[in-house]
Length: 310
Image (cartoon, rainbow, N blue to C red):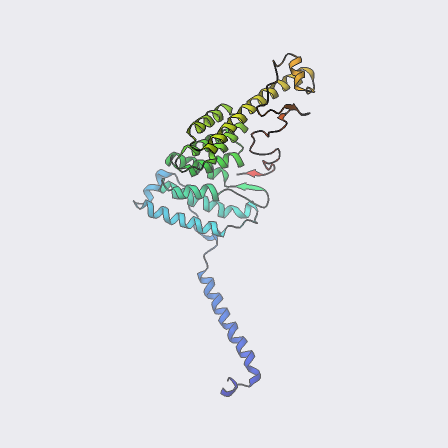
């Protein structure tokens, strides 16, 4: 067809390629104009306290909070997981400030608190965990503003247990989440496990007794009855380990058996394991039952040592 208009037939492919290249170049230039600016070139949201942020919204609190929240979602979509802490820092800082500004303008914005708790903390390829402390601060503000939202208490407990290693606070927040409307049934069991891991057996037992009394289904009552048994077992184990430590301080070695502690006058008797098993002492001085595992959240190496938390 091109040949009929004066072009040689052999020139048709070259003309077609040139035409396609011209279209591609025009489309690329158009796309470059539409592409959002890099995070580093965007206006950085300044950190400001709530008593300054709210007046600057000039009465349009909800609208301004919605806009900054949507911008935070767009920043989150651009974040990469295979970068170093230094490379991730500009986006992380912008995301943190957008979410902080959002909840300071609208303190009842539940979705912003939830996004902060789930999106701010992340690990970079150089084994640094960033966003944890900022998310923790925002979630603490969230549970004060929205004390009936179980999601916020759950996210707060997760940060404290997984990243910060504060089992006592985590257990308290999981326990609070378990008592709020809409909270999943498993949260109560999780709370008692975390509290037992952190050594707060009294609080864990009170929560378990309350949940057992409120349980409506037979399976739930059985679960809570077993949890109370495990908490009793944990109390026995902690008392036995304290006696083992005393024996070691006096004799300079770990007792060969728990009966040796009784013979040394440091323990009146070895309590019976509630499941019919036996308590044993290991070479490192730890005590465990022969059948049932202890109430622990993490294993010995599960805290992922070596990470830096920011």
